[in-house]
Length: 103
Image 1 (cartoon, rainbow, N blue to C red):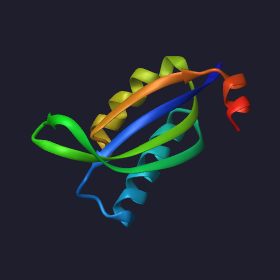
Image 2 (cartoon, helix red, strand yellow; image 1 turned 135 degrees about the horizontal axis):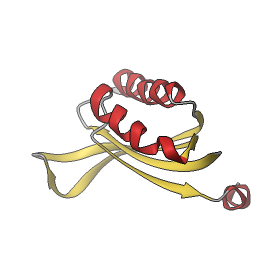
Image 3 (cartoon, one colour; image 1 turned 180 degrees about the horizontal axis):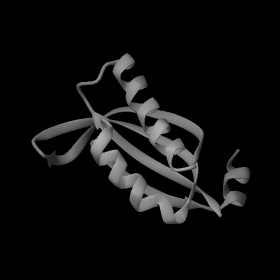
Image 4 (cartoon, rainbow, N blue to C red; image 1 turned 135 degrees about the vertical axis):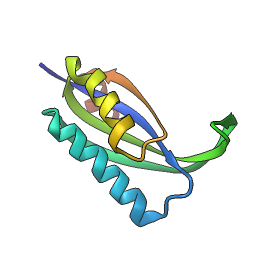
């Protein structure tokens, strides 16, 4: 059964707007390959890291809400590492009723 997830994605700070659009589209394509669907995307902009990670000092943050089968999350993480421009990602399972109350 597909569940709703909130994904925090960090993209390299060197991306311009067009490259960022392409990177988010690549995440959507990988998600759809695994049978998931994109709900919404919120760009948070460029943020500095508290401490450097892999010699980088900042990144472009985006929150992506999506539906995906829970068993596919490890495969999704693996695909993101191999084929997209995602620097870091983190996923949290959301309750559908919490989302409707926030809106």
